[in-house]
Length: 167
Image (cartoon, rainbow, N blue to C red; front, top):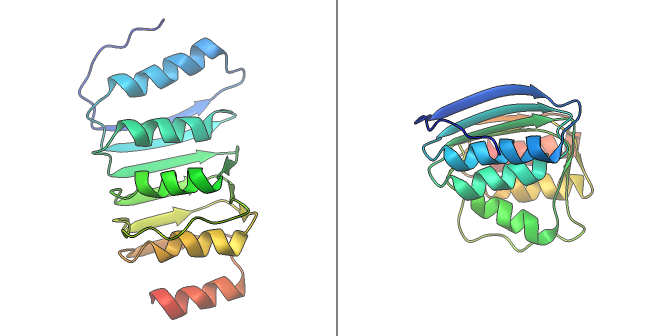
């Protein structure tokens, strides 16, 4: 087991290149985020880290005071209906969210949440597949506070929808 000195970090950013991610390395990485209780900003570039989705949920579940989350990875983030609902609830207090991964939506989207998200800056930098338009519309319908929006790989129809509903 790896022991971390307990620093009172409020911001953590790192670029990790995992060639061979052993269980002990994965465990140490997750333990780091258990120990750091004061984080408000987390920015990670995780190259070849196969546990991106698991780590993202781990961070969101452990940091209720988190204000900014940025995760970039070559690995996809796949949402079931339940996981998408859980994700939307967990990001409800974030001010800034950047996901630079391919997002795969569920076959059936959950019912809209009653609460809107606090997100003011939203950047979805990867492809969105499986219900592509529907997943993006679902996320955007909860983001009435967005002041800065960055999307990649969108159709003309999606851009028209954004201009009609958000501009």
